[in-house]
Length: 410
Image 1 (cartoon, one colour):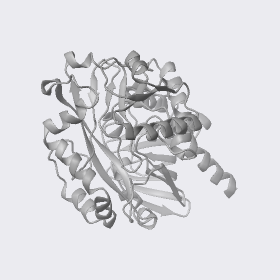
Image 2 (cartoon, one colour):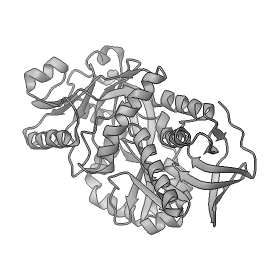
Image 3 (cartoon, helix red, strand yellow):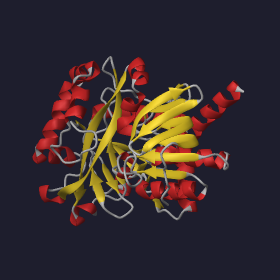
């Protein structure tokens, strides 16, 4: 599966980033035009080493996203394509379903609005549940009402990335691993990508670099008024005793005024149950220890005007997340709102991920996927969840735009 990247190599298209989105773009390019020279470039020695390999594995239904947004459309389309790809490559895909639980009466109106939104988006099989119907799905969950979403699934996105990488190579593409893209230099006919392994000439470049996208975008990100702010998400794993209390997935009712969903429970394909993630600003983009810091990453965040405006807007939420991140008993209290039988000893250390979230200069979280173009270079500027679910449809969207630009230029 290894590709050989030589200095001063020339390609029709270079995709920067060997996560599931970047690999899906390369796969789609080669599916449409098998004769073109395509390479995927990544600084890591393997594929899917960051957001792709460090998430909960949830295949989202499309319920949570604003109707008409790219997230809503591409999540619905991408889920079907992901399921088909997993079937073709014998990757376990478990459609476990999800229940969204209201525990307070003031959440009922939001629950009903969410149900209407999901139906507008075309999410299949949604049901509004009372307490008795909820217990049929999740006997141990406490709540007064819920939404049952049967199409939510789980998959190992690391396996998806590995299968995509194999498909890219089998189709004639190259994997240029262990080479970091340092700079993209536009030219009249394409761009030169300066890497730690040499210079690469590309007629077209697609940047799917996640946590590093704004740095490679440079002035493009500045002109768009965006910067990537990393949010660390810690998970717990339920003990074997407690894992029996959860059959599928359990989510709280999201508050549309707040940026993140809150504590939730996910039964993985391997049978473990994850609790989380939380969302705390990280002082390192790609270091996963609890107190890790990278001075350059930290300065990039705290020097950004948008970060301080964001902090002023959500200071109470941020303090709560930090408190629950530091004090396990506080986190346990949030968990027990939904599963009152969970004990302290049931919360075992779990994985850690870092989410790449674009923040505007005005201090707002960019809510939708964002794809920007300048010359021969395309940047995926914002692709947080549900990007993994939507990888195949994001790839198709990008390649459609590239083909449209090609046609317009002819």
